[in-house]
Image (cartoon, rainbow, N blue to C red; front, side):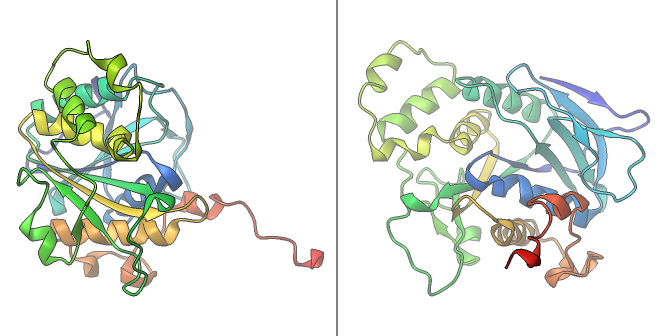
Length: 280
């Protein structure tokens, strides 16, 4: 993985907390990172190039009058005033290369002095076994603070550890082995008969979690369940969770939405124009 800085820009070493998405159902993690970048007015400092990410290009995602800048698959931003770094990912990983991508990213993050990595992602609502809608959309987490994935700070914020995390389960153990550079000789055996318990460690957030953990970094995954469709409400909730965990003061945002969020310009066309009312 190579980093290419924007002309005249450089990384602020005081921005030791990194926020990034793990691609999953509904693209909630990416939408939440979009919301944080626009609300923090984070500065783009460069982009990352990795052979395991599919190439793509698009228009500027955040400002109504872009200066002709192109958006690339992996872009790096920072907000020095908030001591935060952010990476936005806009295209998927090449099939079968998620662990390699996660290893490359972990090497890059560790070598650039990051201390805490926050991964934002979503989970399939159809897999949620203990549904409780009485408290609204719930945030689940997974942390490297303790061996069982728990974290006292996250518990104080009212979040629940992802119950399906079991570090002794075969797929989590296999993933950790790969992250630490272990052999893949048992790969065929492990994948012969996958069960429901193997779903969560097969997701992108799990590969990132394991590879970053293997580098000795503090990692916190913030997760929410959702379905495909309009997942902007889930993106707001996940961005709010990241704000609470990092101690961001939303009163410093300059948007008009609830919580003073600044809506990214690209969201205006996320789901196309409204339906023609003359049809009804």
